Length: 289
Image (cartoon, rainbow, N blue to C red; front, side, top):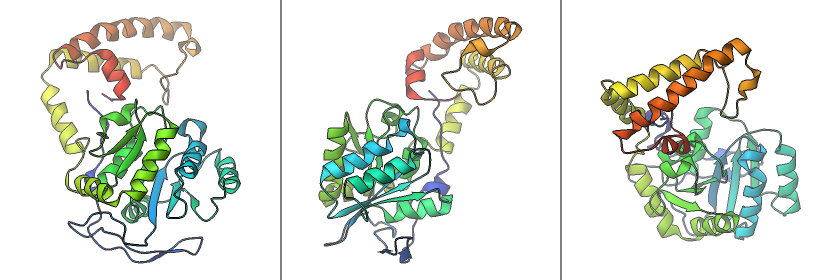
């Protein structure tokens, strides 16, 4: 499987202390352990800062994240920053108010990449409440930045986060709340995971992925698979996702696509046979050719 990848230079840990920062709520945030060799740890009496980046849409589950943060019972010693925007922003803001989390959960909206990276540098942990995540680029970026990650198990994030090594994978919202509490209260564990994530880059970086692609260039079955998928992408409308309904194609286009899909079905087993993987492993893992 060939995963998506990121540029480690763009998302790796910032190796410099960060200045004090004023946010829109006028609270001041101090630098944390972002110097070389440092660990993201909480000094005595310092609040733990958690961050999550997502589109505020139902599939991403921002409301459930706020509810899990409330259920964790850590609002007196931690705060949550949610970065991103979307149709559920008003509902999320109302839930924050209803749960008495005003001043503890902050909706920051969209930010520039440089500001996002600095937010990661100031944070102590990253939360990912999405259940259906094909790959999890945001999780990978936070992991590359050195943050311990808490994410839902059973999706493409499983390829990024190893349980108890890069962070925690949880099965449901009750476990999500418990994991949030652990990240906040277990400073030793949080520091060990952060140190690991800062010193050990994730495998899903471009240098590694491109090397894997280069190794496959001479594989006849893989070349056949790529050729078939390229032929399909020339016909299927741009921006189409996995839920694309072929009925919207013209009859002529459908006649062309059908044999290509058949070719793809024939090519997948061949391409994965040598790698010891099955086609469904590729689809479930959220990889990309």
